[in-house]
Amino acid sequence: MPLDKFVLLLVVVVAAAGATIFVASLGLASAGSPGLGLASLIPIGLIVFVVWRVIAERLSNAEDDKYDRLEK
Image (tube, rainbow, N blue to C red):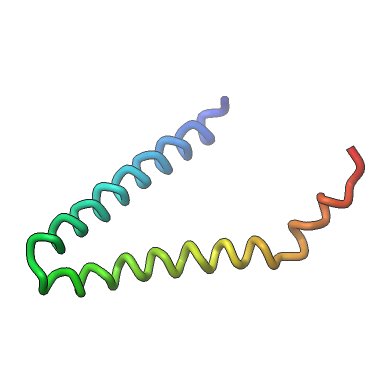
């Protein structure tokens, strides 16, 4: 495995772990104080929106479908 792919894999894994811990800490903090629950919906909503837009773009992109028509 080339070094650049290995480093990219490590960065993605660390970022995913950090995002998981961040979302979990927001969830635990919102359970502890009712006022913080509404404030934690903003970053969670932004993350959900970005993931939704990425998936919608991947599904509607015609360039990605050109490989589906190739014979194997």
